[in-house]
Every structure is written in structure tokens, then in C-alpha cells.
Length: 117
Image (cartoon, rainbow, N blue to C red; front, side, top):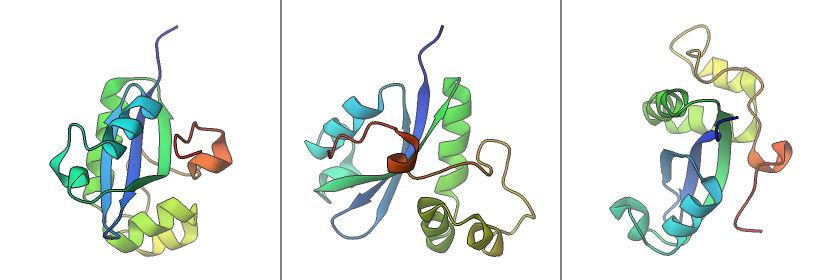
């Protein structure tokens, strides 16, 4: 069985969002928290994991990352809250792309590891 991959959103200290993907969510969030690997988050510490979704392949996780990066702040807020009616309200398309669709929930609702404890 292959390892899972993740797309994720971090909330930074300046209230901005950072969207990424990884094959080890816990380690990657810890790296961000220590200012490693990304100039955006390094300058906006501390960061908090606010959303993640697991995928079967790196390509699916990256596709979701790139999709969410293009979204408006309101649409990302709706995704983080798990409010799919609001997400659709802010969508330019009738339905999300295949990478991100109904069933997504914040990490604390899905049992996804939250390095912030």
C-alpha cells in the first residue's frame, strides 16, 4: 500500500493563508512552524493547520493544491469551515474540480493529525 499525500492550508500570523501539498503532513507543518522551506510562512510565523485532505497520489494532492491556490479568500474560508453551500455560492463553476469536492472536512473532524495538538 502506498503512502498517502495531502493538500493543506495553513493560517499565518498575519491572517493570510498558505496552501501546499506533501507526503508527510505532520512533518511538513512542523517544518513550516520552524521557518524551514518556505519564505511565505517563514516571514509570517506562527502558522496553524486549518484544513487538509488526504489523496492517493502526489498528482492528486498537487492538483488540489493548485486548484485551492486559485480560489478567493471567501471560498477558502468556506472550505475550511466545511460549508459547501457557501463554497458553491462563491464558485465560478457549478461544482468544484474533481480534486476537491463534497466530503472535505477540517482536519479536526476527519482525524487528520494536527501537529499543533
